[in-house]
Length: 118
Image (cartoon, rainbow, N blue to C red; front, side, top):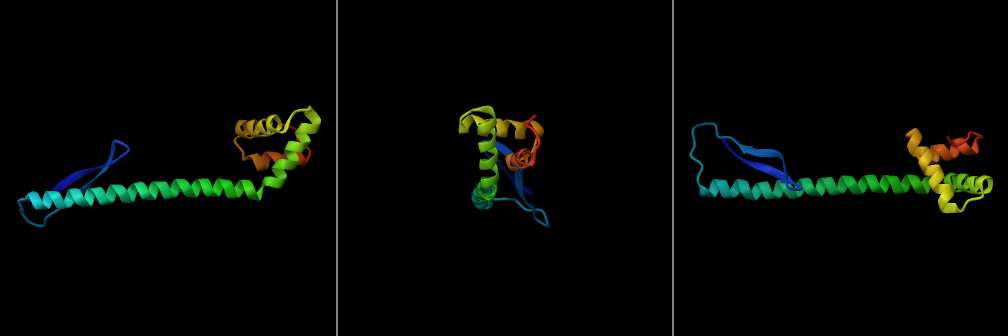
């Protein structure tokens, strides 16, 4: 068996192992080949993580766009009731969402339906 660690962000996250069916003495070219492949695997994992992260951000932005009107209406309602500016009203809405572990749009919908912010 010949193995090398797979590292991401300075930490080892796994290993890349090559096995031979029978007894085999790994030479310098074998070690160089697995190290080259190790670099490829590390870059592939980094790209996959970056793509996943971007996908999450895109989903969050799309959610915000889809629910923008509801959130804006709720912010307006808070502004009118509490006589605060839009940033403070939005922060109040967002804080309530965090406290209740819900999405901001869900809290906004509840507020528009007559519930109070807790």
